Length: 389
Ligand code: AOS
Ligand code: ZN
Ligand code: ZN
Image (cartoon, rainbow, N blue to C red):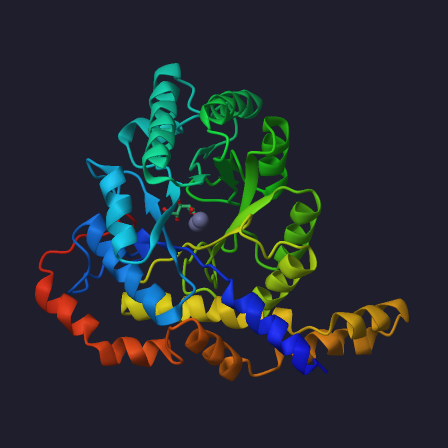
């Protein structure tokens, strides 16, 4: 059993948690079949920050907001950062977008045409300029690059082009800035994706240096992949930069974190804690789209799900687990994990929120605040975030 002093350590650890919410989760989104517009969605990056600030006010653990360029393009990023600060949040990771121009049909930084590669690299450099203005630490790179048919392009040459672009961006990074390289099994390329797995991302990051880190998007693996194993290995090698949390049932569904498989989220957070990764060095981000549900409470729910999984992982009785493992007591070892997972941590996290000056029941508090109704009245003509056009 977890002792009383352990519980206060768990509570203290939970109070330090920071989950970054994505600006695009607040806008309209959908699938390639249909975008269901929702009244009251933000019309500007500033309004997305207003929504993110609500999430932080109610949960107390969502202090930063990830930007996506050009979806969040503004003239003055310093002013946008100041706007965020006035609302009690900060700008976080800058997500680059080299996947939505006609030019990128055959890829971006891996494209066979040097002119297209230059254009893509120019955008990545612009993103670092934006980080300078916003004070953001991390540049998140996801490339939709890949090929659909065997022989379509040279697999090895594409890796060389990728490597060249990454090296140029790496050179441009400031001392306190990092690049987070995201891998994804598939989509939109069906035959070969240029950064399909953690091994490819790791190899590039290793070659680049310590400012290059791998980011694990939970939706980017084959069904049945043991993601916590990947997390353990990357942490062990000092190469885990962060997470894009979301849920998948079939593919890159980007549903609410902890909705499809809360047990997986717990196992991941356990490995994070076990590997000493529960620190600000790891970016705990959501990468989600809310297509049919109300967006702000969906983000709140996701943050709470991450928080509850973390609480359960922190409750694992490490001594009992280690003893059972030493003794080769398979059932006792498994029980040590399951005891923690099966604990109802909702009262505990409610206390943590109260201590942080947030709300014991954030979703109820959000609905009681009237904010959702107000934005429907005030915001006319909200646009989609960028996905699912
Ligand atoms: C795409 O599948 C990736 O998850 C990226 O993180 C992407 O940039 C993100 O979904 C925001 O557009
Ligand atoms: Zn992602
Ligand atoms: Zn994704």
